[in-house]
Length: 389
Image (cartoon, rainbow, N blue to C red; front, side):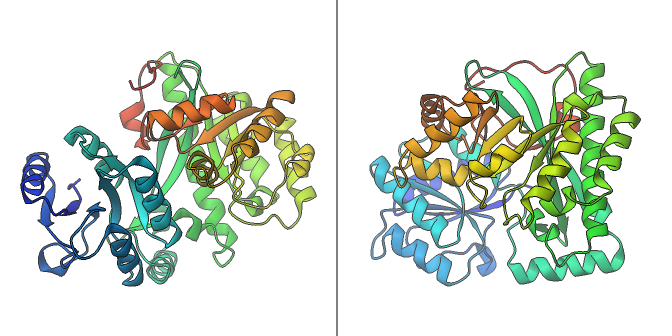
């Protein structure tokens, strides 16, 4: 797979040349400019990744961020600066608020290894607009090719106390014409439920096949599969789940169903009933992205939860001081009292790890340890990798 293109905006010409040389040696198509006057790569194309220094002549980084958003630029952005940590994090937060795709931040001086680690997160094609996504989905549905374009990747969940792998999350990836499609656009009300169920079935089957390969290699763990409330409440889902478990000869306790929190749940009691049907057969039940949707702690009493995953955006807001950390401590304490595993999403730095640990959370997930990878890369005996491994 070709490396993404990367464009550097930094007023230090010597640093630009050095970074560009190192990136090209690693296979990246790299260009650079010493001012914000040129924010595109060769041929005036949006680069896949934009490495932006906050201190620029004539236009500071915050102004550049505003301009990028206003022009509808679709590049992933890495913020890099010698400014103090609070300023860098404020820039990251502002960029996310105005709709830019942020891969992360680097504090100068940083290593090429650190830059490459963030750049790998942007190895997928440039993100598309909602209109692009809708057109591509319609094209795929019309050609019945959507299942062929879908693939499943996996990311580990880690125990915070020792960094050991406690499970994996199966994640859907879909692309067409070189453009990555946001999975949320697929699991949207306007998409026929039959297509949504077909993709969920594929991810479930891939997840259990991956789990089976790990078991054959001597590793026994769990795997999680995302499921929208709408799909959960269809009468077909339990049968699909149980048939897949039987096909791969995996016990139900090795499978976790993560109920996504990206939309309001219209009939919570219906969702709870559907979750209970799966829990009665020993499947784990998790709330994914808690804090992003509308489910309150009180509503969770109705669910037979095994795990609660704290949304990365909420975690980052508390980490950056935009929200009080007491909010998360209350959630973690709630889980601890009821025997529910608390998992923090979006752990990308050692500082994130330390903050999640201070909250008392049991598990974490994020780019600090790994990013989603195909099963073929992960199959085989899995070492329990410690922090930073």
